[in-house]
Length: 374
Image (tube, rainbow, N blue to C red; front, side, top):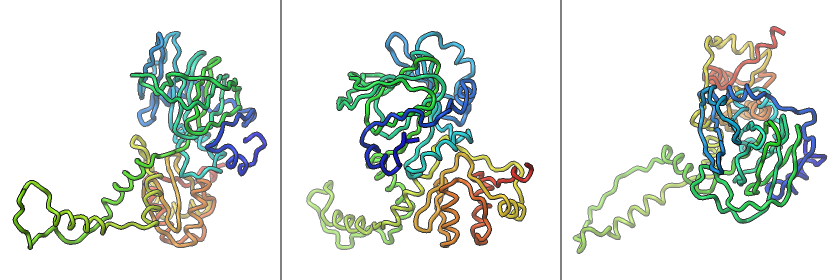
């Protein structure tokens, strides 16, 4: 997949450093879904999608869900349909992402699939995150540049570079893949009807992390006492915040403490928390606890496609929720998080089975019962 490079070499020499073109990274790959299937996803309520059109040099962006008829009236001007989170709806897409597990799950965002007819694209731009661009059906021309000029076109609905200066160019065929580090300028143009699979990674800003950590803390801070000033004296200027008040509040705020474990729990909860448009479907007819336990002991359990699961030091995080477990359960559930499937649950504690059953009734996981009928 990495053109003969080991993952260690790739991470050392290319990851967040420089681009890498890999011919036939996935040989025989021609995509996971066709144009009509992608359009169907773009018309689905809980799927994030966009339609980018260009007319007379002007860009327009519309957000889904769309009506199916929208794709029949696009005309001959360049256009592109982009669908986010395809791995949350297509098992084959989730399986494709497993090839990228040499990057921690905490960094993975999702698999976006785009379709464009000849000439379609979203303009020259740069992303703030790492991305692997895997070509599905058709051919796409990629132009890239290490330019430092990131000035954007004024008033455009997309982040289009004002002065893109191409340095390298390739046409990618089905199965070819291009890796780009953050902030590397690129422009993709469809040579013919084509679909591109973009594996993107999260790079939250320091500001975002700090803000969300403070949000996380606000439900966990408990400071006893109440502001008091029994020795209050007359102030010459009543509108001025007094030194005594400032000193007292300073001491109160300094009582807010956090540890590395607090930060780990924040990261696990925050990075596994589903995006706002994602909803889980509980089982229509849930198995009883006993039937569920017998089923997963025999055939195992798998994650629902939308589920995110992370682990750290005895705590398992699933879809924004944290659960502390014993050492043996932690090792088993970490294996579950790694592979998104656990083939045997024999040996798990009673508490772990209760946890799994809760996740099952919430729609987070599913028992592997189909194998019983094969």
